[in-house]
Image 1: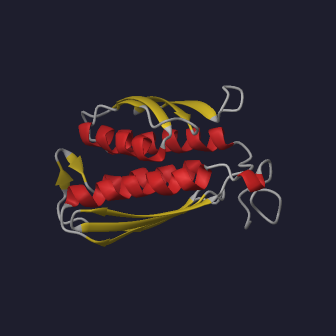
Image 2: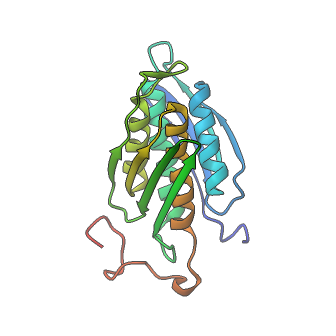
Length: 205
């Protein structure tokens, strides 16, 4: 795909709590350069990039001396907003994506509709309050922020599993594979918006 037709976007988000810049290329190869100051979050975002084939560059500086909440949530907003901007009018996309991801004893199902109607269904439970230094409750915050700013309906369900690391990693890998499918250009729909309404504007389409 030529540089003129590549779906790329950059976003800067600056608040009193965080300063974040991110760039995505939906037609990339899964190359990543991520530094948020939170090691486990970096690892998850690298998995997202690698398995979606979306190139991702992300730099974040946040109030980590307080906790990881603001940085985690705001990176979700930035990545999601960059994806939405790169999609533009969402013409020609497959729109729907689905993945079932096994990781040893864990199985997670992720389904996405790139509909411009943000919604998250999160059926994931953890048995530990932290993974390393990161609160496990923050993962829902990341996916909620991503769904809202990307304009996607996102259903994530951990069907079973015991290892908390495997559970959360399967969620990110599931999003990656479902998103990869959904944003792929369908050659039979090239230039068309995948909706009977002719637009993905946020109304029922």
